[in-house]
View 1 (cartoon, rainbow, N blue to C red):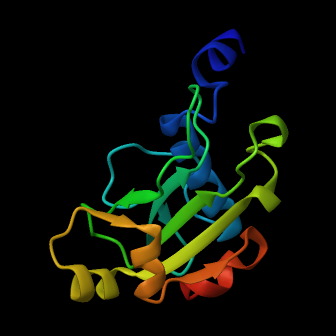
View 2 (view 1 turned 120 degrees about the vertical axis):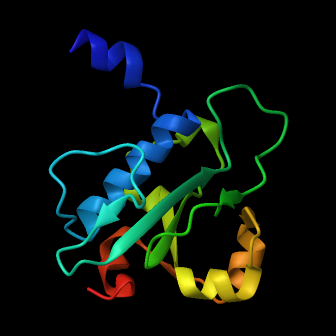
Length: 148
């Protein structure tokens, strides 16, 4: 337990937030993996065999900020059927609780749409995702948008 607290308790940090976002998607779609595996071609596999790549971002970071972060997502690896872009949308540090599902929103897009619309681009902004028709949902309805 000491290790987990020491190494993984700052889930606002980009790397830990990413793992937490993967967990959220995994739990929302009833992912089939028992444990998280690093360095695979996708992040979540659904019971129906759908491969999901999960990306996360947030306006608030672990470090002191002068302004909110610009929302962007890495889209370099495209071996999945869908992307789920997880945004911790909360903007007030005093009331931030990354474990509160109401502070998250999710944007779903088929990987084929990204391939068609942005080609070899490695990064995408939230505004561009919305322009391309990414579907926004909450945690409780995420499963409906991933073809399961």
